[in-house]
Image (cartoon, rainbow, N blue to C red; front, top):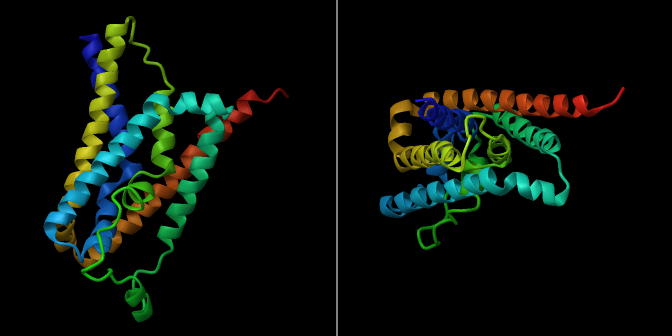
Length: 225
């Protein structure tokens, strides 16, 4: 029972930690804007591709991210500070973005003609739109924490399975939000979408500052005064 609870906690920890940063609800209107000129079938395939790419990126960060940092001699607190700065800047820019673009901005942001190929599902739809440095930093942080409830290899596999299920749930959420992005926009309307984007930007800014604070606190603890 204790191991099952540990696996459930691992699932909830991964999903709850990554969902506010990945935030597919706020990314759905942007995804729709960039793919509006495509047919629904192509857009749905792109949504599946973005979800799959996001899952692979987060899984790689969770499993080997900390080992790569160790190989290059980069400490996790430094990654937290750097990633938190990037996330904070993104949140601040999105928070101060004008809600009503000018006519020139609308024209420059217009989708490409019908004959142009669909955008790459990896860049920029997956990274940095969906899975950015903040999400990868959180995944690396989660992967660097050894489960305390794991007493054997089998226990570690069960708890790791909970974390893997959490990543899969994030990928499914991304797919659902992007797959039904047009429905979400229709339900929320322009004003509701703008409110959702602003609220998400503020949450993103707070998350970035929290990541920075965690990194600075860890660095300060290593100082010998």
